[in-house]
Image (cartoon, rainbow, N blue to C red; front, side):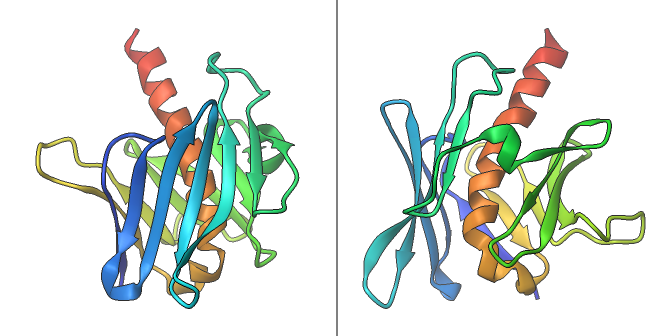
Length: 174
C-alpha cells in the first residue's frame, strides 16, 4: 500500500504536504530569506519546526544553509546532501534513523532510494509525481512505509533537491 502526500501548490517556499487519512501534515512557509518546514503534531495539536533552509540567489552557490530539527545547527547544503559520484543531480543524506538515502532523477522525476542498496533492481522508496495540468495536484508517493520515521528529513531534503532539479531544467532550456 502506498501513501500519497498531496502538495498544495507548485511553490517550494509556500505549500503544504498532506495525507489526511494518515494524519500527516507539513506546512512550508517563507519568512525573509528563510524557508521553514513545520509538521503538525496531532497529540499536542501544535506545529513543530522540523527544518529550515536558507537559499541564496545564485543557483550554484554552495553557501545555501540547512537546519534539521528545531534545535539543529545550521550546516552548508553540501554537508547535508552530499554529491553521489559523478551524477550532477544525485545526492545522498543520512536520515534521523541513521540510514543513508539517495535522491536521484528518473525521467525528470525525483526518486528516493537506499544509498547503500542502490542498483538496477531496487525499486524506489518514494516517487515525486509532478503534475503540470491545471486542477491536478502533485504528490509524493511513499511506496515503503519504513521511511515514515525519517519523513521530516525527507521533506526538507526533497525541497532542496526539487529546487536543484528546477534550476537544472532552466539551465538546460537556456
